[in-house]
Length: 221
Image 1: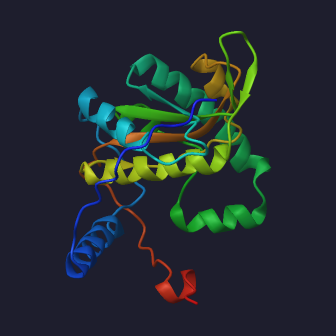
Image 2: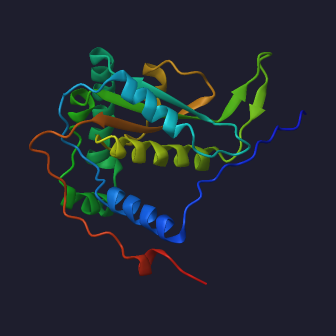
């Protein structure tokens, strides 16, 4: 195997004060990020979605395999098909699949099996993880740390969406196999996350949430 070529890494030369200022600015910006379920149908340019996906695809991955595919959907008919299939699965979830404890945890948020945002939002981004690669001769090639890598890419994507002044929702209709079928994805791909992307509706509301303080999420040694 040919060794990777290396280039000098030109890290930004920041003072300690500048580093702290940047860190605090990003903390403040992302603290206002929220999952939104009430979308506007206001269009979002394809060029913006292109940029968001390029940012997501800059995430680190095991052995730089980049084991992800981002399917960006604006076609109204296809969005309707996705909504119909997702609501079918969600209806089953809310009427028997979910445990009582799960339903109780969801109750304060007022969610149910109806998912109108799947047709109202101008874009749906369906993230697929590539469980393995298929070589030109039809053999399987291994990918590494697939879930971790794709999870990191999704984090980059959500951050980019927020920084672009848009909103999103991490939607996981379970099971999600219908996405594989509707989008005609190859056998090595598995649906990972469904993310509506767009602008919030004028009357959009989000729950009042209290995030855990640093003392509850971090341990310093």
